[in-house]
Image (cartoon, rainbow over all chains, first blue to last red; front, side, top):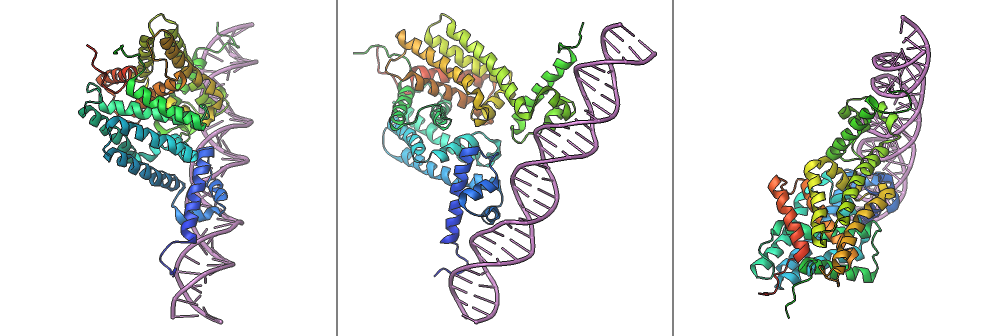
Length: 206
Length: 206
DNA sequence: CCGGACGTTGACTGACCGTTCGATCGCGCG
DNA sequence: CGCGCGATCGAACGGTCAGTCAACGTCCGG
């Protein structure tokens, strides 16, 4: 029975519809230039209804970010907790982020363009930082395990790693890099390759 | 004589004052949330005057970007044209970008936050792309010269390089990474180190 | 069949802000 | 000294939106 008090079925569905619409609209026009009316129209509801579910336009963006970044973080920590060697973990993290693009480009667009560098969501900075921390810890594990060089500053290195990743995503978002199936695979390889072994030709060993 | 027709002295100075003020204001509040009045106030002029020098608020941002990015590009190409080995050139490019932060953090803030990822300035995309091309060509020179590994996709690698760089800048911009004199120097080393030799411990040679 | 709770609507408002424009200032020249 | 012109001012305008609210439909329990 769907008595009063619980919120499911039609109502919860509408909330989701609005959030999904918001992601598409924000991806298309950017947060600031998107009007609340656009989101409502895309969701097929009156714009007043949006205020039934959210207290403001900002809260919509915030919610989009919180719910989705949270999920990513979970998958990140799962990789961190696995018992693979550190370099395999790193590959795992890269895969998570790049494949998210394939699954939901609009979502990644919003994340990268609106949230990544806006003072706006300063409150959420903590959550963002947690992503960096996972990378940093994986690097430190690799150093402790003798796989990664210990002379590197793990914190700064984690930023370089994340930046390389994000820039590729940005290239796809902005349409400045081809993003076909094959290109995504090659990007995966190139990123890991560069970050693992660097640009320089190694001294001949064998 | 300062007859009509030429624009210098007080007038040209005012134009510069407005542009400088705009950089500071955009850095502080972001482009969209900055009001024209804020810029004028920061510059110490009436807000109507802004329209004597620029046709719109957007043109102000565009001008800031165009004039400053152009200068950076020039220094980039100078490094590219030098006769140093490719890895030294790469270090040169890194230095240019990181030291610009020390010289003018507000400017870098605006570049990174507003221009880097806004469809807004699609017209300027060409100029941005030219920066990547320099990096890409330096990598290709390194490959041709046997310094860099030839199996790498130079184009993707250039994006990874730039991303790593930009992320460090972003960290400083957002106040999430310490940016003292010493930290900047360490960042320089870490970036070049990671990108040159990678994360992994090299096989023992000697 | 009634009542009320909740989802939904869309006209309205109040504020904000980019842009315009006619008035004013002040410098340099004749 | 006064004319002219570019620089400067700031009040007013017009359009745009985020957010409000009173009304309406609908569904369900009693």
